[in-house]
Amino acid sequence: MKTLKVTLKRSLIGRPEKHRRIIQALGLRKINRSVIHKDTPSIRGMIQKTAHLVEVSEATEE
Image 1 (tube, one colour):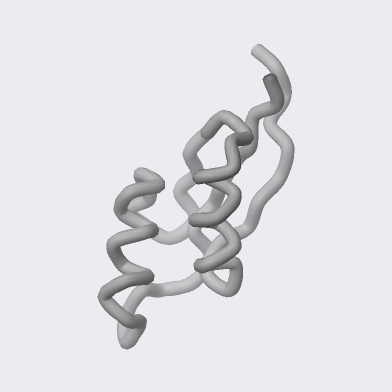
Image 2 (cartoon, helix red, strand yellow):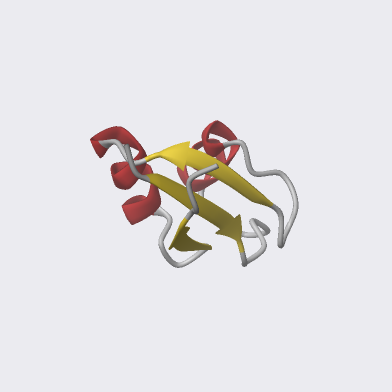
């Protein structure tokens, strides 16, 4: 299964509470920190809602 590397690139200051909760649910805490997730429809939806805050790339299989 493909994996995605999600990196927080923008601050959450002044963002709606819904966006803050989504970023927290993705496991992101600080700017420029990354997490690895499986490529599922639910993760894709979370990324789509916060696309202006995160950067997504394909992670290498390890």
